[in-house]
Length: 428
Image: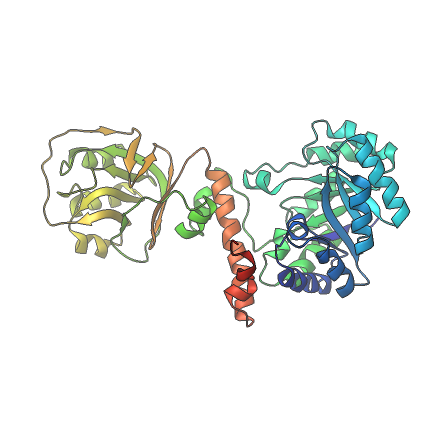
């Protein structure tokens, strides 16, 4: 069978879903999926409206059915769904009931193997039950952690005769790998629904599928150890804070110079107010590209100034973050060195030599460990645990891309409150 492009409308509001659906159909999408968030938000009215607006398209209802298979399939089929998704982790009786109901009401059943411990075994079982498609679904949460692998698809394509649908982080570059692994149905969400021009994004992915040639995507690549800094330079501290559920901020610490961006791993320093000995020693110990992060108790006198900054420029240190005082602000601004501090004062302290280097410290109300990632901009500074940097960076880029789509819709004549249907989501 020719590869099929299915667009997953993972929205929570119908007007935005319908707009992207129209753009993606114009771009060549073969199927439209009412994503789980859309169905949970609006119920099967979303499927009814998609059927009404797009009578010639196949409509997929990603119900993620786990129980009452017959009831849910009957409801979705009567609403206009051609294909209905049931979870492979459901009981045998639920899946069998769903398949029988699909036969009764003219709908096909896709069994999603998300969360199944033995996908090959389960795939063979549901094939015997009479399922029409298999779904290999890399969850959004797994994508954010960078867990994208096509090995399961390759194994399934050799062990089952069912067409395989794959979802999870697919774009115009990775779609070739998915097809080569054995997928026949390509389910694309973010690469289309977050694009400023969903029609063009769809067209490009469809072209990559037809030619089996990678086409460079405008969306970001997933985080690796090699590109994490590159991607963190693209996102704002506000994006990162949203990705961390409004956490990670180093309170009260702001840049000396607006317009500077700071990204790097933390080299930590603990000292006493005004004791600039250990901060200056840190310049010799820190590696190129690291950020010197200083716990100086949040008060003056200054533990940093122009001369230490000049030393950083020589060593190619990325910047400095001080929970305490800095001085020589004017000269440091002229150097355009990324310096962030809690306060500015002309008074320096004395080099007494108290404190330690490269240890866990408390800065701006947060615990900062050596090797944690530090990001600073005009809004302030956030810290990302080195253990979670891949997930948080992916989630921050997800926030940015969604905002890019919202900006496009606002430019087209909407307002933020109307586009997001804000009144509907106010807590009752």
